[in-house]
Length: 76
Image (cartoon, rainbow, N blue to C red; front, side, top):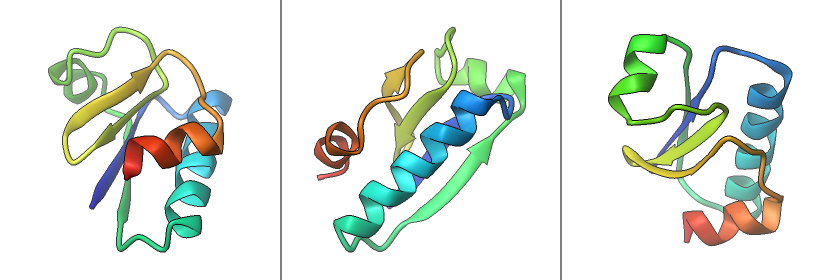
């Protein structure tokens, strides 16, 4: 599973990365966490508000940092 954090590296982007990693670890998933910081690449996902979370290339949430429990639901 490829988990992508889309954002420029702001505090909320880093917080989303931590939440996503915690959720994946708690679910014992085999995953790769990638931070996408290039604006041009972020735009190709159709994201206009960061931070955003994509799983296997599909955007699951944008513009907010969800709770660990919410991210778990997105990863299952």
